[in-house]
Image (cartoon, rainbow, N blue to C red; front, top):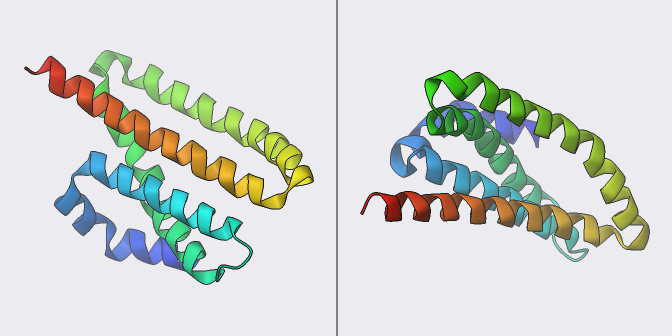
Length: 138
């Protein structure tokens, strides 16, 4: 899986950004992670297809967030925005395993469903922000 993520970042990331733009590349990555997690949650599914999808998303989505954040705030606030992003990431690294452990105790597929739902939420945020920018430009 790590090899797929690395290969995607080296060989395909720039062409995808050129074709889709940075924001839609983030959406593409989030949807790949979502699809990969959802696929892994089904016991009947082949493991490698969702794992490859997740790897492509892992090679795409995290790389777009700092760039999008830095471009979305004034220059004087970039350090603050990136610091808040770092705090959120580290907080989630502590809280997510606790929450996922509780879900896993009920049913292991709930972990994958929760991860997929979180990534769908991220995609929703991308589209809400894009809609807001569109309406403000009118």
